[in-house]
Length: 339
Image 1 (cartoon, rainbow, N blue to C red):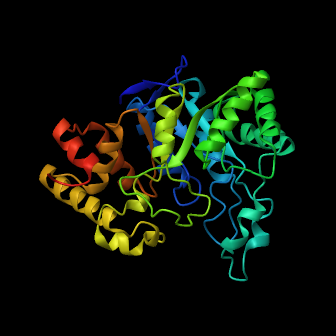
Image 2 (tube, rainbow, N blue to C red):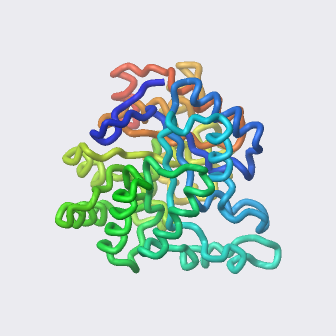
């Protein structure tokens, strides 16, 4: 697997990041360990989790500790912490996940955001200790603010994160689901106060784009404004979550069953999906593989998070890393149509 430089630091990361959201819940220990071993065996080192993965599966039996616990157990058993570029997040963990469930155990999604722990200094000091304990480590390579908390002053969040860096508990800081103007403001505040800068932003990014002004909840899509910002701030890395939008490029059935298809249902999306279907058929690969390969060929570099709920999906994602696209193919894909 190709390695790239992380945000102009001395760290190198794999060109793709392993998403571990479902480990410990939908993916059991045996498959989790097998996937993690395989990823590392193929020179992957960038692993992503969060302190809320994954409370939302099941009927209340999970609380968000599961993924970090699984990664921590794996690193402890393999004794390979120094070979992993480990990323986790705080801020979207629920204060009480049971309080927002109905009688059947299903989340009342309209109440979830109000139950987030947030990004106050107090939360940060507590959250890092919880993650370190579950991950069985004394430092995090990349610590993200999972959701932009506008109720807390930026200075408070940034100073608390700076303290973690000073203490050696965190090496790099990042943000996720944050508007570009908020990112720019945060970095200016950090520069004025000599705080560490955000060096990564994790946003949703895929081949099709959501409708303008569609309500996506906390999900924020990487847009042209963000790309313009990144072009002039090369010390930042864009990490793309949900690059396959739950695998909708695999079939029309997947698209029909995608819970948020209404946000993407527009003429441009339909045309771009036609391009994916035509080119993937010509190449003898899946539409999902082609989308990941396209992201990996983009400039500036984008690191896609490989998400999956089963071993077969992981293998499909990994096969995309070996696909080479020509300039002509990239021109067609970027244009979203055949000439």
